[in-house]
Amino acid sequence: MIVYLLCFILFLTGLYGVITRRNLIKIAISLSIMEFSSFLFLALIGYVDGGVVPIVDMADPVKTYVDPLPQALVLTAIVIGLATTAMLMAVIIRIYRKYGTFDIREINKLRG
Amino acid sequence: MKGMTIIVKKTTQLIAGIIFLYGIYIIIHGHLTPGGGFAGGVILAGSFILLILANGSDFLNLVREESGSTLYENLSILVFLLLALTGLLAGAHVFFANWLPHGTPGTLVSAGFLPLYNIFVGIEVAASILTIFLALIIFKEEVLR
Amino acid sequence: MELAISIIVGFMILGAIYAIHAKDILSAVITGGIVGYSLVICFLLLKAPDLAIVQIVVETITLILMVAVVLDSSRTEAYSKLDTQGWVTAGTAVLILLILFWFMKTASAPLDHFGQGSLRMADAYINGAVEKTGSTNLVTGVVFDFRGYDTLGEATVLVTAVLGVLTILRIKGKK
Image 1 (cartoon, rainbow over the protein chains, first blue to last red):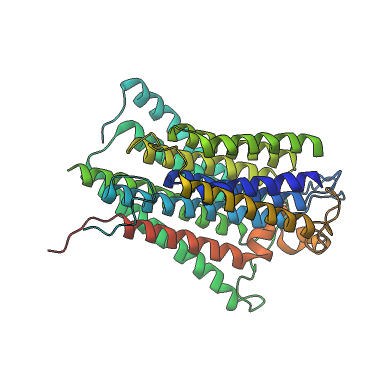
Image 2 (tube, rainbow over the protein chains, first blue to last red; image 1 turned 120 degrees about the horizontal axis):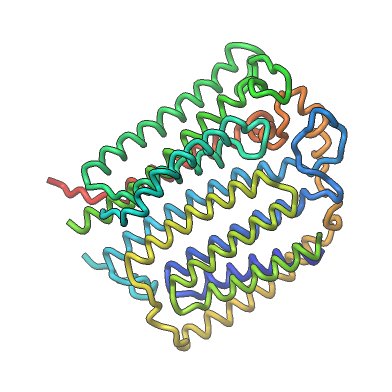
């Protein structure tokens, strides 16, 4: 159970970074850390003690396998996380070209 | 954008082909060993990004490359959708049915539609990541002009 | 096994705390990358090699993207003193975090111990999967055959994200 609590603490560290930091790149890094903690939690739920990798060996097919369903969910989620981070980086580059700074308190003045 | 020194250029010319071949291996053996379409697609994109970063390109080559990669991405997702729709016509008459013969489990030609799905998802993921990378580089070059 | 994963997650928490408070942004980005690579070791210990391969290559691509963005613009964080608005935000954040931690602790009490396999659907997916899908890799069978709609949705999300990036990064003026 302590592994679950440590996973939650990682999530809460990322959430602290998103709330309190003023630099846009640090907000992006903290969002990425929150995503890592949720991947880890899903992979932790499916683990079975004494289980093997979920690839069936045709010579010796009857064993205890680790649960393959949470692994399939995390596989999808990792690629979606990459797409989200790429789009966030595109928005950040555009903001830097227009305002010249990464500080979120300076960019709330409309210019142009 | 400028390329790098001649040592980096020669090394990447040797290595990029091996990385490309490794990506294709991971995609095709997706139903036998760990890996599959997504991991192999990202490795394929990695080999192209390596070549572009090491050799550099001028602006018109990059624009032409980007139109090619968006074409591949959209074509492969369309073919994936059409392959999934053929399940309505044959077999169990449901969407996404796996109606090709299953074969012997454990050999390369087995599992019906799964290798085909892996290949097309792999091409689509590789082209997506290459397009994102090229869009960023073209933006930087256009601002510098 | 539980002890090894706990130590690695402890290192990840330390790395995350450093990445949030670093003064140099390039150091913060690289430390975020190290947190991602430690996740690969956790996945290998949890007997999930599919996830390890995908996570390591995706983390490399994310690092390339972020380092390119940071090196192209400013590299230092020009402000680190906390004024009154900063102290109020930090205090509110700590309060919210404590309440959320208590909620998560209560919500995870009914879960089984680590290693029991808390999900009931595992037997339905594993028994007879080789005959139903024909593939020996169970995770690929689940991703493309049993839950094919999720894969279709994910490919669509990737195409939409590329469309969004291409729209944001265009400088074509109106002629």
